[in-house]
Image (tube, chains in turn purple, green):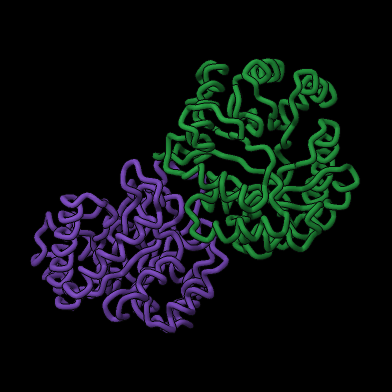
Length: 285
Length: 285
C-alpha cells in the first residue's frame, strides 16, 4: 500500500500481538516503522527484538518509555536515573534514536508542581550526555493535563519546550502527540517554535473520544473516531520541518479485543483518510 | 464557628440534601452563603427557594448553570439562548448576581474548537445586556481540558479572559475553580490579569484526586485530600482583589453516600485548615 512511507505502528495499538506477530503483520501490510515498549522488548530480549525488526525491514521509530523523574527521595531518584540509563542502552541496542520520556507526576503528598518540573530538568542534565553517548535523543512528552498529578507534570507543549530548550537540540527534543495537545489553542505557535528549534523528535497520533474510562488511560480513539483534527497536526508538524515517522499510538481496550491484522488494516485506512487526507485514495506522500 | 464569613457551600457538595435540609443545615453550622443549581431550585420553586434561603440568613453566591452555547444549528441555538435567558431570570429571582456559564463542547461531528469558541462570544453579546437588565453578571467558567470536547471548549483562564474581555467587566466575568485550573503554570499571571480587570465573579474550590472515575465528572476530592494548593488559590484571588464568597463545590459520589451534616462539618474543618490555613484554629478572616 502506498502512502505509508512515514507511517509507524506503535505496538500498544495492537497490544494483543506478540513481537513476532507485530513484525510479520507490519511487514505484510507494507508498514516500515514500529514504535516499541520496553516491557515486551525486555521479555523477548532486546538484541533479539532488534534483529527481528531488522529482519522484517522495520525501523524502530521510538522506544517508550523512560522518565518518572520527579521523586525527591535519594534512593528513588538514583533508581529512576539507573532505569533511564538502562532505557537508553535498550534504545541503542534496538537501533532507535528516540527514547520517549514520560516525566513523572507529583511525588506522594506533594502539591509543588514547580519543584517537580525542576527535578525533571536536573535529571535531563544528568541523562542527556549519557544518551548522546549512545546515539539516543531524549524526547520529553507533554501529557494531557488530566495526567498532571500521577503521570506527568509537563502538560503543554510550551512547558515541554521551556524545559528541553535548556539542553542542546540534538540531545533533548519533544514528542508531539495529538491526544495530549489537541485542546490547546496555543499549540500552533508552539509547534512552530519547536520546529524552528529542531525539537520535534517524534509525532504520535490518536483521537479523542468520550466518555473517558475509569483511570482515563485506555480510552483513546481510533484515528477519525473523535474530534481531533489529525491532518492539521500532521501538516503543522510538517510545516515546522518534521519529516520523520508518524506513529499511531492508540491505547484502547476496544481495539485490543479485536484481531490484530484487522486493527492494523483499519488504522492504515484511517491514516490515509484522516491524516494524509487522501480520502482512501493511495498517494505517495 | 468563626472564619466562615466568606465560606459558601455549593449544594452539589451535599447533593443528598433537599433545599430545606440545605438551608437548615447551613444555618445551623454558621454558613452564610450557598451556591445553588437550577434543577433542584426549579423543582422547589424559584421564588420559594429564594424565600427559604433568605429566611435562614443565607445569601446565594451563584446559580449554576447556564451555557451550552456552541451549537451552530438555528433551532438548538435559539433554544439555548432562551434557556439562558430563563436562567438569568431565575438568578434574579433568587437574589444572586452571578450566573455561572459552562460554555459548551464541540457540536457533534465538529473538530473546530475556534469556531465553537466564537459562537460563545456571539451568544454572550446577546445575553450580557439581558442579564445586566436583571442585575445578573454572566460568569464564564474555564473547565479542565478533559472536558473540552463534550462540555466546555474554554479550557484555561487565559482563554476565558480573552473571551470575556470583549464585554464590560460588570456584565461578564470569570469563575476561578481550583479543580479546573490547578495544573496550569500560567494561572498566577492570569489571576492577576483577571483581578486587574475586575473579572473574578466567583471562586470555587475542590481538590484533585486520582484515579478519575468513568466519565470523569464525579471524582472531585474533598478539600485537602488531593494535590491542589488550595490556600494558594485563595490567597492569589485575594491578592488580585477578589473578596467575595468562596464556594466549596465538590462533585463526589463518595461524599453523597454520607450524612449531609457530617459532610458539611468535614468540609468546614478542611476549609479552615487547607484554605484559610489556620490549621483548625478559628480565625476571623
